Amino acid sequence: MNQQKILAACDHTLLLQGATWDEIKVICDDAKKYKTASVCIPPCYVKRAAEYLNGEISVCTVIGFPNGNMTTATKVFETKDALANGADEIDMVINIGMLKAKEYDYVLSEIKEIKEACGDHILKVIIETCLLTEEEKIKMCEIVTESGADYIKTSTGFSTAGATFDDIALFKKNLGLSVKIKAAGGISSMEDAEHFMELGADRLGTSRIVKIVKALG
Image (cartoon, rainbow, N blue to C red; front, side):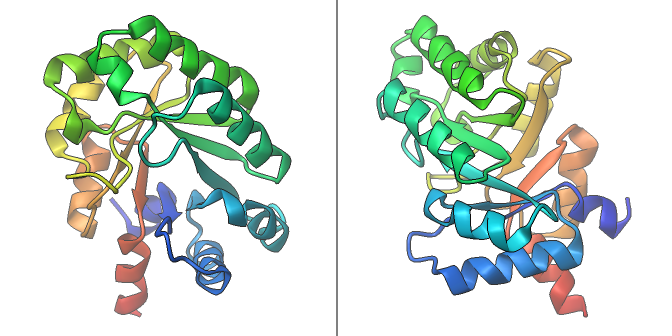
């Protein structure tokens, strides 16, 4: 798999709490230079980034991040606000407590409401695999498939662990054909990135891949 194919699958990401506009601008410049799929950035920078990129690269942002236990109304408002500011793609965090309580209708309804707010914009559903049992991961594959969301995503990168090869294989086995996969969190080498894609990941949430390519000159 060539380097550019991997870069083209990357959501070039900076979501740290202390991220400044100057740092976000570097992410945008690198995304343009290396032709990544998108930049994934905090909501407060979406408007500036969208204006700065002027359609050259998609702008992705996060909703209900990183814990997911806001009200549905809050998440829907965040989504509409982000889209109004120029976001092209939305990565939302599920309500993990509701999933663990087996309140599946709540989890499904929330994703559906956010997808409705997204319209034709891409919605990725972050399920935070490191906090889930295998049964819960499989259940989320079913819920995301039913919801009409575009992607299932492994991780926020802010919990106890990130993407694993086993989780991507599990997703591939249990998702409907309409749902794509985003591996995120802890992807630290070109070899790992390639293997995630070979297993079925369509997107990679990472900051390190571009850094690796930059270091290679």
